[in-house]
Image (cartoon, rainbow, N blue to C red; front, side, top):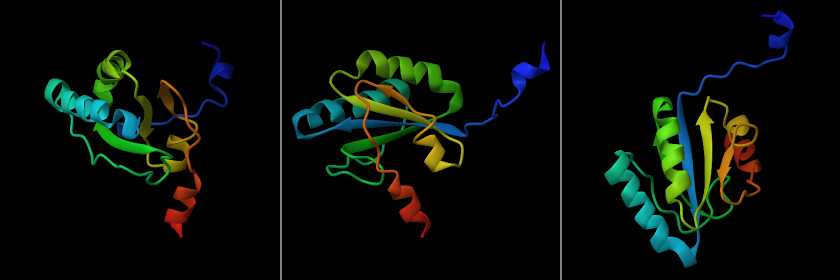
Length: 123
């Protein structure tokens, strides 16, 4: 293999992945249903069902953490079961700013995140 193909390629290692379910008052019951299914069918832990924007998330959200080895299973399951919810998926590499900007995958609509939440947290 030509070594020049590797020049400039950055290596990252995800410790785990996070999915954030995005919802509002109109589809909160659907978000609660999906969180319940994630626990029952995939054995995942879900976070608090925030009913206000929090951190970098511009709308109501609920976080889900899952191991690297379950990425394909979880993302495919979310893809087919998300209904009207939008979902942000990102790795946890230890660099929140990059993980929430350069390394994101969206299922459904994408949103502009409040990236200043990370710089504020550092102060």
